[in-house]
Image 1 (spheres, rainbow, N blue to C red):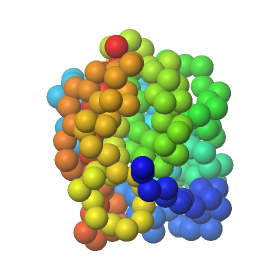
Image 2: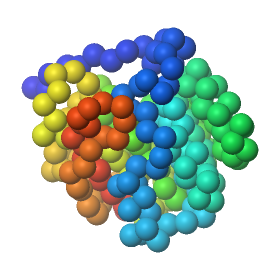
Image 3: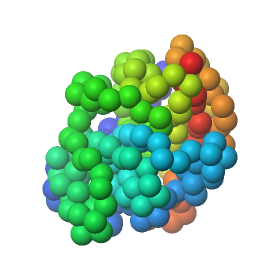
Length: 201
């Protein structure tokens, strides 16, 4: 039985805290995301940055010419990220959205999840898979980053093995690759992470 984990009220957190102090704040595009984009030769794609938080990944993708929609559960996260993007003159569509009750109607070439799935309650994971599959075009990609089982930090998100990800997503996705990496951010040492490339069947 998986140990239940507790998480903050995301809206309250983004209202009260500076995004630069948050453990997952990383101003550049994650190196594993950058590498995956190159390996799959993805450019000019329609991208959903799911659970965008500080919005740094969405902004990095927009700078590279991707058409980006960025969503988050927190209104305050969206407000703060969109303000920074406006200052940088980046064209990104920002939306407050709950992926488990999504209002999105578009279909995407790529979905980047750098921290949403691994904070969902275990009983909602199957719902997430169904929704994300619906939002992706056939044969297109989900980049999924989660905490790895090799991470020993007491608190924080749920941890995953590659075999667990493969099992959870197998109805709609092929697990193309899974690599041990780190969760780029403000913590020292950086938490151990699992970066998965999943392809929609």
